[in-house]
Amino acid sequence: MARRGHEVAVITTDRSDRLPISESSPGLEVIRVPAYPRDRDYYIAPALRRFVRYEQPDLVHVQSYHTAVAPLTLRWLAHTDTPHLLSFHSGGSSKRWRRTIRPVQYRILRHFTGNARMMVAVSEFERHLFLERLGVPASGIEVIRNGVSQDIIDQIGTVERNPDLIITAGRLEQYKGHHRALAAMPAVIDAIPDARLLVVGTGPYEHELRAQARALGIGDAVSFTSVSQTDRGGMGRLLAGAAVTASFSDYEAEGIGAIESRAMGCRTVVTEDTALAELVDDDLVHGVPAGAPTGIVADGLIRALKAGTPEHRVTARTWADVTDDLEALYTRLLR
Image (cartoon, helix red, strand yellow):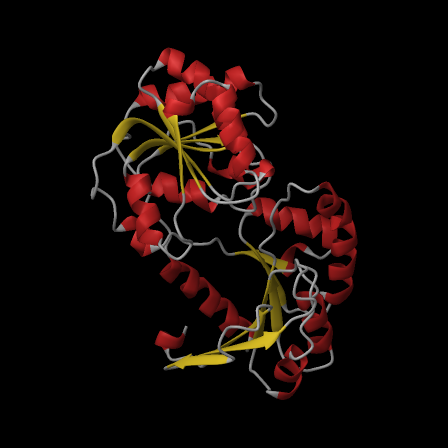
């Protein structure tokens, strides 16, 4: 947006109290405000009120609803004439108490979204989910899908693709479903002895996943690695070297990892549920039913490996496309 001539301010939180209060480049300023409590994820950021109420921005785009920051910001904006919108960026959780309080979060969010000019979902699945949970008219939520980083796409063809390599990538939490790929590997190896699984990510479930691999006796066929979220080129190189990727998550608002994999020419096997179901085409992306037994998951991976490298790739939607859509939406809201 800044490169297109807009003046952009990103107001964000810093619970560490270690980052610079502000940073700037032409057209873009990043401002960080304290958030409390610092050791919890339901934090608030009272200093945001000054920016949304007194700095008189032309438009405010609120990102995510998971903490108390978004509802309070929406509440403050309701007392101004500033056009504003909300993007959900919804996600799943492995913790039962988080899933239990989600209906409360939705009720709170519903109370504060009445004055928003628009809400943005990243998939039709997410759009319909929030139309139902917030009780807003169909015209109140628009779909603007995320994009694939050009740094990822640039890695196509940079490394030799391993025809026997499967990648399961994402934060290492139980709901992400990496354990389902691991559970399927003994059957996959029986059918394709050279098959290997690479688990990419970090998170609290890593110890359990490593223990599972040892218990299944497939430790030699499974390896773990991680790539910084900011190193999209590094992620692209991993995908460029894989034949198949797996995404067996219980919840995805969009499934950007599967979209990146498909754009990189990997065959992809996903849980046919939530937003992942929108990607299934039975060619590049094969779906297995939610809660499918391990044998069905294994069959999906075997089928994908045996299918070989696809003859075509899907043209990737990039962040430039996302910027086009957001710029058009902002212009519409400011008329």
